[in-house]
Length: 525
Image (tube, rainbow, N blue to C red):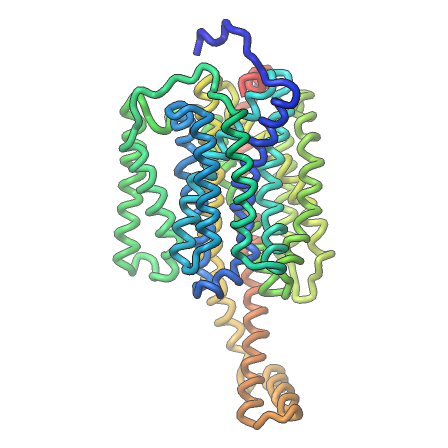
């Protein structure tokens, strides 16, 4: 690595540079779009493959799990196989898995191919970041960060829009089929334009045990989070077993990575104070970014009766404000503004967004949500780039590349765990709210009994028999109850996530920041 610093670095120019950048950002966007593109289609997919609301969440979490596993390994795999070969192979794996996802006819077949798709997608995300940064000289790194940063935020935001349009006008299968032509073109371009990383040295050995322990830990912990509610948590022997397997895998992984000189993931970097603080913020950022994008479409479709297209199109204005905010953040950082101040402003914006959502009512319309989502878009932009800048402050060279990969991993892990925890929270809250509301629906309650009698009379007037009219009235009341309990549960879910976001403020204040170190960080990054 030291020898390469004495040689002039050749940066791509002209059309070659922009083809390279567009190829990389397109692949990164494909991977990020697919983290959320299925969100607005979960109801259609679950009905088609015969899955429950809890089971269908595995379509999202399987993708997130494989992302979390592969992202920290991409630096090693890229050096081992060569960046061009690894990136092209990742595109091919992602594209083929997309084809198989679209052709799946059962839940677990779809979950399996989503996992494979995530393995390819995770390689695209981290490698695309190094490609984009490497295409710009140090004095233009802010531009590279802005391009990649917009992709990180815009991908998950535009996913529901595209997913909603495709679901309403075609079928959910085309959510995956649209990746195929883009993937084919990207594979051709990446093979012809992507180069190996300058100064990269092929690893002498691959830490297979570390990889195995990483898979064991992440997979087992995620299984516990997903299936815990259904299996009554630690009353289930299966949950107890998987908890022990996950704990063993985590301990073994940490011990292994700290005890060898060729670790698959260099977790020694977390000895850096800012890296440890940045990990907490990235985890909560992922939880909020992916968690709210997962919960909002379900909320408006179940409680407010929105269509998938309506849900997706609604997300566009917030994404546009994100696109405008990212260059502003870059200028603020470049002018020497303390990143901690920028992050705190972003935290307060996202907190306000979630608090506004937590007061939704059955009469809420799209206009009630536009301003909160503008706050979300700007707030995310104010958090994303400065968090990475502070987390990797003082690192350089190979450590910088590893730190960026670990930051991406933690953010994805936060999203995966966030979706699982929100599912658990909603399951418990739905039961609790339903139990409370049912106490007011009985023959002794004047309001509910008169409402049921009114609906019964209405059905009788339409020619139904008394038995049929009473059954239809009770069924209608059940529908009202379901929508109301869902509304209350989702409101409390938004409130919970908003409260968690506030935890970031004391963490930000604890981070050490030296203004003179910023220029070095940006140049290295």
